[in-house]
Length: 201
Ligand SMILES: Nc1nc2c(ncn2[C@@H]2O[C@H](COP(=O)(O)OP(=O)(O)OP(=O)(O)O)[C@@H](O)[C@H]2O)c(=O)[nH]1
Ligand SMILES: [Mg+2]
Image 1 (tube, protein in one colour):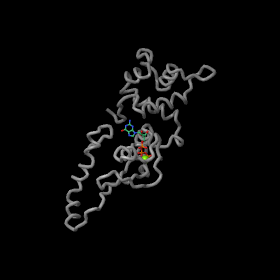
Image 2 (cartoon, helix red, strand yellow):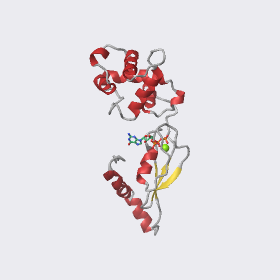
Image 3 (spheres, helix red, strand yellow):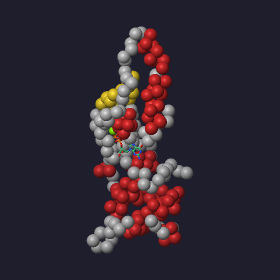
Image 4 (cartoon, protein in one colour):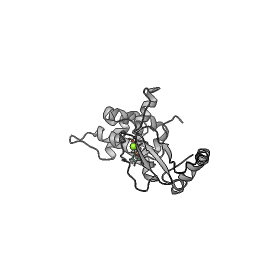
């Protein structure tokens, strides 16, 4: 079932869908005389992907802690969302080992890996290197760059150019690469760069 918390129709339909999916089990419970058994759902996913936000959207009295960083939910907890449905919020999980660097980078770009253990400048560099190929015009438009001037830039020059355009300059006049890198990743994670896919096109 495809479900978006931004679509109020989907939210309203959620409980109905759950009852549909659980139909057989509910009938079995009913035949055994079990009438008030709650339907229990566990929500599982990678860190910072919006698990707790879904619960808050479904529960009338929202309570799950939500922040834009991975590792916010620290322990499992149950939330009642009405109609005898309870949802278990769980901390984000990642694979014990990544298949390849590409997978690790993509997860890091989206904010699923703690920033503290990453080199932000390197991450922004790797991000720009990848998306510049497929989304050059979009990046120029969003950051206000002149396409003709940035056409032959490598990723570092491109980030420098973004920093200059956004006024991220250190006291000596150099571009503040760290601030610019943080901004690029933040814009991507907040959807300000639009819908960019990290998979090869
Ligand atoms: N653009 C957008 N942002 C969302 C959506 N859902 C959640 N977010 C944002 O994503 C960030 C993470 O949301 P959480 O609900 O805390 O994510 P989580 O999966 O519970 O994270 P952990 O508990 O750390 O594993 C927050 O800043 C949310 O506001 C969505 O549908 N669209
Ligand atoms: Mg959470």
